[in-house]
Image (cartoon, rainbow over all chains, first blue to last red; front, side, top):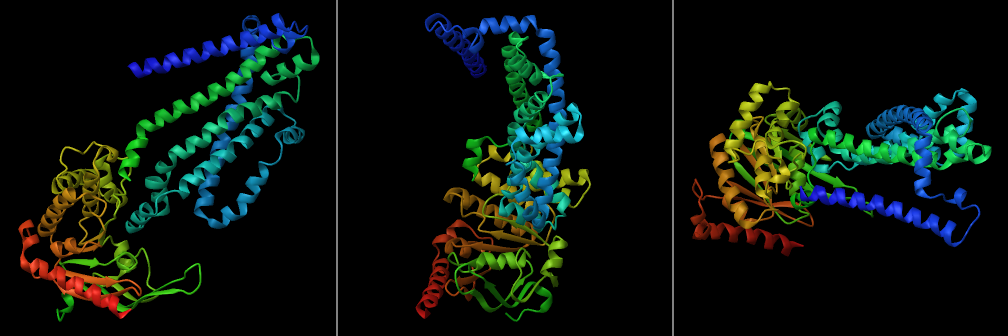
Length: 267
Length: 264
């Protein structure tokens, strides 16, 4: 109980600290340096919050739109990454053939790729889903593959002694063993999928949290919503990360892991 | 060793292994090794690291295949014997699944064989009794001591009722006291089940204490230098560890090692 209190306390301290630092920086800019553009460069945190509350309906709606497409892309990307890792682990040929392409795929800047995809599918939602999936599959695939590859040699020998089929090898050993690796990949991918979806928003001025940012930046008319939108977009990333952690906790109920120190002792 | 054919459980004939080294020439191990393991005996492969004792165990388990020669287990090829689950195997590490309870770990080979749940549960209870782990069914491996984990590994290896138990330095990572207790338990299990046990070790005392026969291996080149029949009566007990005949067997084995090295 005491430990949970401690954790909550540090979270509260972190939030209060963040708030104070922002306010202090804004005060420096506005009150000490007397920057005439202070309200645009770095408005007070409380001003951002009140602006967010004023535009809550729109911010929430556009955030939801961006987040839902990101989530769809995330799920598709995770599935593709999962299958790719499985195929690469099963067939060395696939790994040798696919890995250079996978690595190359991540070198293409999303800044250039997103307009290309949008130009091809001509649909904002589809582009959001595609780009989010594109950002997701790589870390998931690579993390899971490294999980599959780190299965202990003696564990493999044991499965061989049972004359195990490939299917049972994955079901009984490689998959449950690799669950922590899979979740590491998902944790990296989730905020990336959110950012990707929000980035596609900026390709148009129609909808999505990213479009609010771009309209506010260049349109000038809704300057007030710029900071709330940036705040909301950041929160989307954090929320997605937390959701993956919660999902991991649920899965750990069924596939428990050894606590780190105990695992070390056993070895 | 003029025992009749039907008493032979494992037969290794004219075994040669060639390991291609990354740097330079291949290394040849066992220059035409012949060995028979009899039904129900406790046989040890004893030697320093690099002598090929673990390699030989893996040949029997069909985890490795010989470059030359034939391995038969229970009258059939090692590959076929593996597919028919003729042996259970225990490694130096317990090799348990952290995400499975003790009971589920012991049941793993039976799950792989799709044995009915009810039967599995009965067998798990029986096996945990055999290795003195009643009451730990729902514990996780990381909650147990190293010795208890190895007991779970032994229970798992026995759960399919295979006639052969292959053990690859199973106690070498355990402390002396735990090891002694596990020796007692292993001998008791062996006497109760009548299994053929192939036991790999680098500990002379352990090999003499447990075995009917000790195969002494030397390294560089890896070869079987001699086989010593251990005539100590059964059941064995710790008093024997200070008996003159026990010490004589230890001396005999040491002598084989020394002779093996003088040749080099």
